[in-house]
Image (cartoon, rainbow, N blue to C red):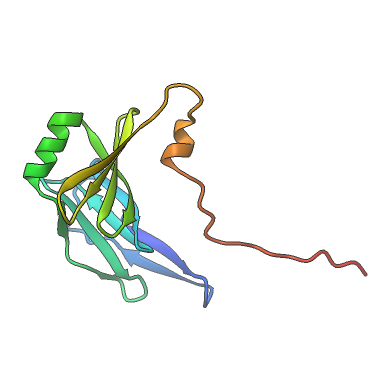
Length: 148
């Protein structure tokens, strides 16, 4: 169980500790941390709906309200068609990318409730780790080589 999140404010170079709401999660088996528009989001499937809880302000430890992303009826259709799905990332606020085992990604439009795009993974020449976790540099270090 994760009880807190440590954030680094690059502007002030200060660390902030934010507690995870204790009553929200009894288990982490069906909770996935994702980046939602630059904020930490916990996407979960504790009931039948796929839900989201967003850390709105890490300095004030303010979490938003837990909201439904994909209602149970749509989740049932997706799982009946594709079996087990796992939230992977957000494209935009309304597009959620779902991973289906090691076979494909589905882009699901949260606003319309429609599966918009399917991206099948090739069997050969594909590095699954690079597909699941593309490298995104969040800090860029620049330096000059100075000689005396």
